[in-house]
Amino acid sequence: RKLRVRYGLDPEAFVYCCHSRPDKIDPTTFRCWMRALSRVRSEYFSRVNDKNESGYPQMRAPPVLWLLRSGEEMERNLRDLVRSEFGQDMEEAMVFADVAERNEHLRRLGCADVFLDTPSYNA
Image 1 (cartoon, one colour):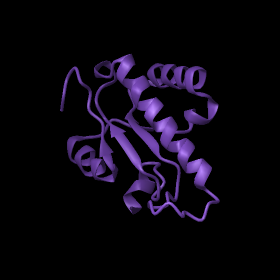
Image 2: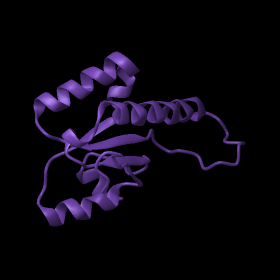
Image 3: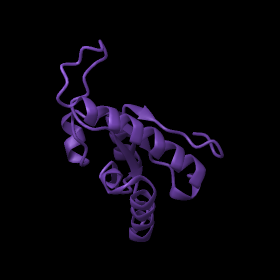
């Protein structure tokens, strides 16, 4: 979990991850991920002060989507899209990772809880 801090991830957050090149992530898939993440984050924020009587594990931090950074324009466009379609609070749900050499890239993938794949390319 200490490694998560190094990459700008909350050690307690549930991390959805896709480090595919941005051109592999089609708009429909990205929007699907954001809708799902929005629902999970809404659940988190609705339970922050609850006693967790549901029997489900209590989330300790809001979940995030961890994406591979591919230039300022790409990041700005995704943030603009998320802000306009999902609301400003969802913008902070995205965390961007810089491109890294292969060994570091493979090591940091261990920080993710779930790997999200793209239907067009598959990993």
